[in-house]
Length: 197
Image (cartoon, helix red, strand yellow):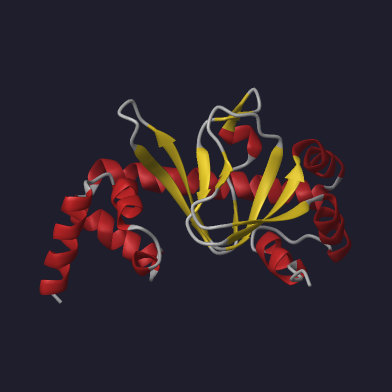
C-alpha cells in the first residue's frame, strides 16, 4: 500500500506560503510520486528535464562533475524541501547540475507545463513560487558569503548548526566537497573539534 504524503506535501508548501487544500490536492494529483534508492540519480546534468521536484523525505545533494571527473557538491537537501525551481536549474530544459539521493528519497514530480499553468492562474501558487525563489536567493547568498569569508573550521561549524546529525547519515566525502575541503582536511577538522570540546 502506497504511503499517503498529502500531509507532508501540505506542510512543505504551506511553510513557504498558504495554499488552499483543494489546490494542494490538484497539485498532488497532477504529479507522480517517485521513490529513489540510496545513490540513485534523480536527474542528470546536461540532460533534458521537464519537472518541478518536491522532496518529501530523505536526503539528496546537487552536484557537478569537474574537469578531473570529481564530484563537486553544491547543495544538500534534507527532509521536506522544494528543489531549486526548473527555470533556475536548467538552460533550454537541460540540467545545469545533477541531483542524487544520498538516502532513500521520495519526490513528487510535477510536469513543468502543468505547474506553470497553476502558477499563472492561481495567486496562492504564484505567491508560493515567489517565496521559493526568495528563499533560494537568500540561501545561495549566505553560502557565497560563507565560502568567501569563513575558514574551513567555521564552514564545518555552520554545516553542523544547519544540518544537525547529517554528519552521521551521509558520506563524509560529500560533506567535504560541499565545504570545499579535501576529505583528509575534513577528518583533521573533526578531530580538532572533538579535542576542543
